Amino acid sequence: MVDDRMPAIGRCYSCKRTFGYQPSTVMMIEVDPETGLLPGMSVTGRFRDPSPEVLARVVKQPVCQECVDRAKRFAQAREIRFETWHNPG
Ligand SMILES: [Zn+2]
Image (cartoon, rainbow, N blue to C red; front, side):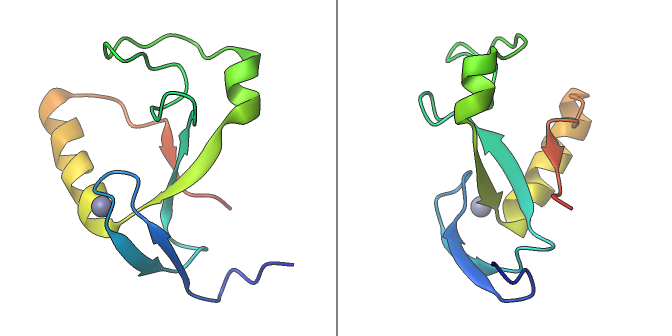
């Protein structure tokens, strides 16, 4: 059983920097390992509902706080909705 209070080390999905984080509080995003993109997002940046096959292979990747902050600023600037980003638990 994984203890969520134990610090973990992982690679930020966004900037690829290795960083330490608390699994219970870190921002995780779901990524399609086949494309390296968010499920449903194509390499051209188009977005459509992900297929069940895509959802079945999705993995969660941590994102460091700096990238979360940057993404939030970017989202506000572009008025992109943020529902695909979420915290587990
Ligand atoms: Zn980062």
